[in-house]
View 1: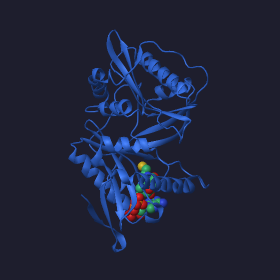
View 2: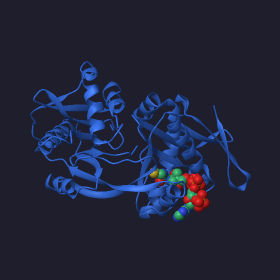
View 3: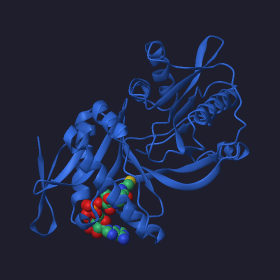
View 4: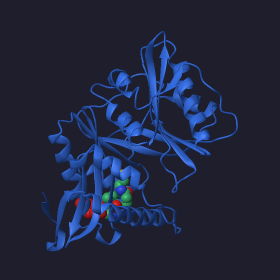
Length: 323
Ligand SMILES: CC(C)(COP(=O)(O)OP(=O)(O)OC[C@H]1O[C@@H](n2cnc3c(N)ncnc32)[C@H](O)[C@@H]1OP(=O)(O)O)[C@@H](O)C(=O)NCCC(=O)NCCS
């Protein structure tokens, strides 16, 4: 079903759920929008890679009503994706063709995403955006979002020094059902109603990468989700989507290191030479620790929330709402 939004200059746009046959156009719109942003941001021509088909199809399979396109006169001019992690709903990426920007298409998509997350019962609605872009800050601040934290983008160039960690096992399709409850429990230890079960399922079942769990004394003490799906485009990178350790454990740092070691090792075996991690800047201790592990700061996003309160407990975790 489409929702029609009236825009400036008497124009209107239809917002509707994405379909499988939209995929190529959605990839094209994303490439054009982000290449244009790169040109404005860094002042030089840069052709942004098209978003992976596998990623878009996984988003559509996981949250079908939350993957939206904006259509004008039958042509897709923008798109947006919603994600539901338990009671936490977040939005991203969201993009509009440069020639169609500043007429209200972005806000029409954003409102439709918020409606979807409300209908899905999310207690928190938020997103992350680049902290240095005045347009993006205005776009979200004027839509009712308030900054809650800074998220650091850190990267490590892989060397041939990956260590084999102990107490970490890779989750397979057969073992996934036995760890989902632990993944849910650990998310909720970090923030009320946070649940990465759907993200873990997507990584294993749709082969986006790997899920690792660390067991201590028979109990799951932490888990990590590593994305390695970027095969042809951005082929050099893997990305640690989530790494969570039980914040009440005394050995948090050891469990974190074991999981990080395993992610690095898996990245190296998948032929990646860079590992990317996005983590909260609210803990200088974690930042220092990542520096000591040869991660370098590449940039920062600002996390913004419109509905509810979101706060993470503990120090040693990697989480991001970047789509
Ligand atoms: C961010 C984006 C989705 C917004 O889409 P859009 O269709 O232009 O959005 P809208 O027209 O609804 O709103 C744009 C707002 O920014 C304002 N704006 C435009 N340029 C601006 C600038 N340089 N500084 C501050 N505000 C600016 C407009 O006036 C408008 O605000 P208003 O509604 O209060 O008048 C679009 O710019 C885009 O695709 N950017 C590239 C990808 C990206 O950054 N996505 C977001 C990642 S989190």
